[in-house]
Structure formats: structure tokens, C-alpha cells
Length: 316
Length: 316
Image (cartoon, rainbow over all chains, first blue to last red; front, side, top):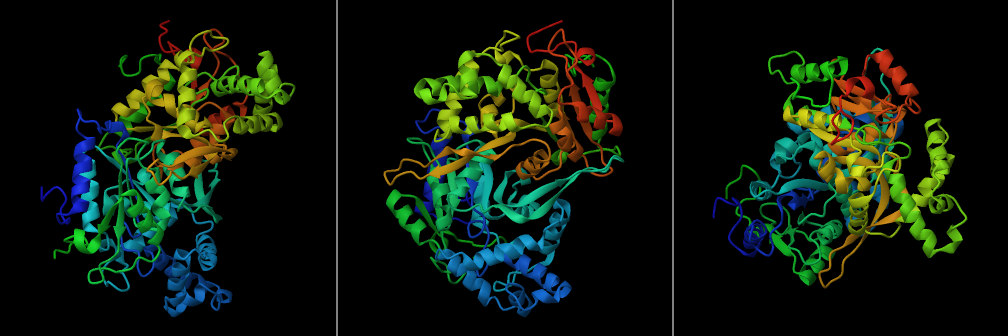
């Protein structure tokens, strides 16, 4: 038993996972789920890796903003470029807090800067930049590589699900193409199973000499994959209704609500950030999700109580 | 050899396929493609199943239009409902011909009717309707079930590619959710590997008693997956650049042009409908594609010359 889900302490959350997997994979049981229908979807920021004080991608963008402001002095006194250059995260932290409170005005400014940041870059060049970032970048507070800010118990959960025939998709509110280059290494999830927000893409034809066509990002978002958009993107990608869904924030409620059919089994996990010692302790942005979870009997996972380990490589 | 690609006569097309697969799967060869990168994308209408005189989905829609006109007399004297009720396909055939000539005015009327036709239907109900249609519907000219209007040599190609580690995706200009319910049975391709045009979807939350949320079609197209949109949708779905691409029409040129990286191997197949006896003979809508194929040395597959069998179940 202990080896099934390393990093998980015995308790209601761990037992809910083990019980669900046992029930849905028992060929003779009432809750059996046929292998083709064993689809699991997991949020990324705050569910598989740390998203505090700001999502990893924001740090990536800050570095790009610094680069842009170096090249274009007109940007230097405007947000978010000003913030990026001073290295003070207050404006961005506030933008995220306002987003969690339902005010997206600052986030929209950020999204605009984001789409501008990589307009006309092609998908291969963007992929290379992302890989370069993850090769060295460190978490500003935890002071460890971002690659080691993934939650070890969640990785154990992915492997456990896969060992029982579940196919795992990420369903991130972050940029799909920011997560794809590292999803295989960090999570064992290939690019075709990373669902997420999308920047617009335009096809640029190749030439008659045989150079292939390519895809370049436009300066517009295609869609922001959060809240009610998550079930739409999950369906668009998979053509299936998931039976396992895991998230940590209000924006994950529709995804969790979409899991499972009327009377069929479903496992809905809501990760609670309540571990001030090993990570962060805050319910900001998860208030509605926690209320719905209590109402509907979804499984709340306490980082503090349910996990013996938090980060990959740690062993407490 | 004969068993590798049943239905294909010995000739340049068959040899191009065998040679490409041999080169890209030889671990020591210069053209070796690692297993994770072995991605093949295939158009559906006119490439995997017959699209003449009108695409299969149009027949499906005609039946829905008849149903709508029964329910709402105001529709009976308007196109395409009028056409649907009289059973005369002239207007629709003309709409498709005009589309192939670059005039989408009639097609847009059709698309409008299409999106209206299933607005507010949920994804499960639509899936059931599609399955019901394919259980009995027959091709109006070939007089055989649509299920038997798939090209046997192309199915053999799919199996041959898969046997050599290729993962096959459909990239249809038709409605993704119209093809998904039958893609496993007809092609051995699961729903998550069907890429195609998308009608908008809206999430409808479940209730506190535990009824799950669902997705309903809106009355708007999300995107029409043809021409330069195909590479965008292929990337969005897979996060990879395909190395095998097959199509039959002008709208497939960007998809074929997107296959393969600069100096890496790529197999680009253009199916030519030149078999008046066993199917249809026309280059309408493929003129540009044939010209580009000639320019760039893409492999043209002649239904008449390269295939010993056309439809699944036949044996000529």
C-alpha cells in the first residue's frame, strides 16, 4: 500500500484515491470504467507545480519584458515593463490577487504584454526559449529550480492512475505552449496531452524550394482556458468526459463539475494550499471551490495533512 | 510485400510509402525519425471516405433540415431547407462546386443552417444522432452504406503506419464531432485523434444535487478547419509537426506543406480522384494542389492506377 502513492499520508484523501481506482478498475464491479473512458484531467498552476507568489510563466515573461525594454526605451516607464525592470513583484502580485477577486483589469494589461511579447515568434523558437528558461531559472522565494517546484505526491498520483489504465491530460489555465516543452520531463505527459490557454497562430507557407511552412504566434489570445472554458477545451481535445479531475482554484470548478456522467463514478480532487511551512498557506482564489467541494462532497486534499512530502526530491 | 499494403498496386505511390517508412524507422539511417515524432495526419472527406456528390455530413444535415422544416413551416420555402425537402441535390452540389472555385457565399448559407440545426443540442445527444445516421444511411449514388464508402487502401495505409510506430490523426475539414463517433469503428482512430472543424460550445453547469455539467453547441462556428487553419489545428492538438500528411484537395496544401522539418524526411500524399468506373473522376477543387505537388515532388496517388481495390469489402 505505502508504495502505491508515495508522498501521501494515510487519511481520507489517499483512501478516496485508492478506493476510486479499485472500484473503477474492477471488471465485475458496478462502478467499472472501460479502459478507453479512463481519462484524467489535472490543472497545472497550483495543482502540479507551485504558483505562488506568481505563476512560473509570469517570471518567464518578466525576463522577456526586460529584454523588450532594453530594445525599446518607450516601454521602460510603462507597466508591466517598468515592474519587470525594477524586479519588484508588487504590481504583478496585486494583479494576480485582483484576478482572484474577479477583477481582471490588470491581468488584461499583462495578457496584452504577453501576446505582444512573442508576436511573430515561430513555434520552434518559442519552444527553445521555454526550454532555456527551465534549464536554469529558480523560484524567487523557495530558492530552488522551478523544475523542482513540482509536487511529488501529484507525480505519484499521475503514475498510479496510469498504472491502472488512466490516460492523463493537463488542463492548464496557463499557456499551453509554455507547458508542453517540459511536460514530458516534469510529468511524463507528452505535448498532445497538454491542454491550455492558446495564443493565436498564423500559418506561414514554405517556399517552392521545399522549405516547410511554419506557424507564428499572433498578437492576440485565441482563448483563456479557465473557468467554463476548461470543459470546452477538454472536450475539444479529447472528445470524452473525464472521470478524474484535479484542481486547486475557483477556475477549476467547471472542470471538476464536468467530470463523471450522471450516475457514474467520478473522482474530483481539490488541492488546498494550507502548508505555510513547506509551501504557502492561503485560500485566496479558492473560496468558491472550497464551498462547492463541501456542498458536493468533492475530495479536498490538504497539503499539510495529506502529504508527507511536498516537492520532488524532498523527504520530510 | 503484398500483404504490407493490401489494395495498393505496385507502382511509384506504393513504393514511395514503403521506402519512406523503411527509411524513417531504420535506427541507424540518416532519415531515422524517433518514435515520439512519428505523427501522421490525414484529411477525411475525399481522402479516407467518398465526398462526392456531396460530403457525407451534408446528407446528415439534409435529414435534419427536413425535420426542422416539419417543425417550423417558415423554413420550408428557404434554402437549404427547401432543397432538403425536395430531395434535389442541385443547389447543394452547386454550393460545393462554387466553394471549390473559391466562392463561399452558398456554403456560408449552409454553414449558417448547420449551426442553427444543432444549437443547444448537447454533445451526448449529437453523438447519438450521428451514430444513428451511420447505422443505416446509404450513399445516394453508390447505393451502399456510408460505412462501406471508406477507401480500403487508405485503411491499409493507416494500419501499416501504425505497425511502424506512427500515430495517426485525422485532420478533417468537416465537423470534428461528426467524425468522432465513427472514427474508431471505421478507421481505428479514437476521438482524441480526430481534429476538425468545430462548432462553438458552451458549458452548462450541473446542479448541487450532483448532476454533472454538460456542453451544448452554440449557433456559431468556432473555426472552419481548412486551408491555412489545418496546420494551426494540428499544432494546437498535437504540439508536433507531422512527418506524414495525406489529402486530396486545395484546402490540404498548407497541411502537406507543414509536414516535415527543413531537411528532415516527409511523406506528402495527394490522392487523385481519377477513377470514373469505381468512384468519381474529377480534379475540381484539386487544381492548385496538383500543381503544387508537381512543383515540389509530392506523391500523387491515382485511385485508378495505384489501387487494386477502392472500397472496403470490394475485391476487384
